[in-house]
Image (cartoon, rainbow, N blue to C red; front, top):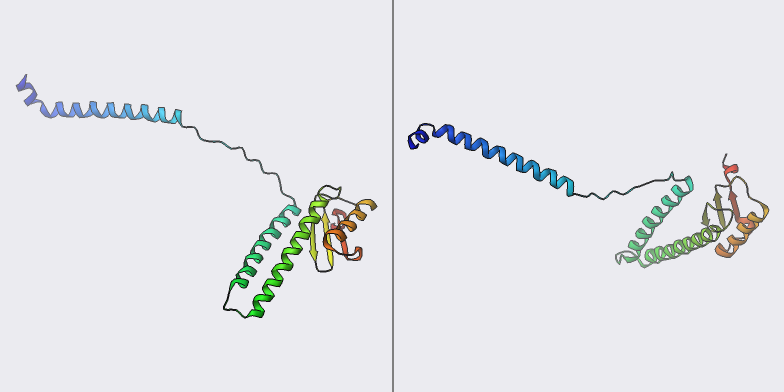
Length: 168
């Protein structure tokens, strides 16, 4: 038997190597199948509703507001600038925050009305309300005028309402 092993040593080593390789492949294949069966990937259903032009505008307005806010805050914090420049930046920052608060208050009040969905744009002395409704009733128009006066301090002559019919 020892002579047989010595004589066929290379063939026996090759057979041993092939058997070991086959067992290793089978074991690896089995582990991969088990691992694939036990892995649970989280699946989240995402549905996106088509956004309206008003929501797109609101998003862009918010991004612009945050950018302007950080720029003005950086100007206020820079001690290398003149006092007048920093005071002007602080004044603009206060005006911008007050105007945004008025816009949010007006939009919040209109959210419970028949004018919604809408956005409000407030500038010094004027308010523009853009709504997706085709037309507004006289009651809804009066409500917009009253809320513009209450939240932005703008007289009815400075209030403009744009409806979907006006935009055509």
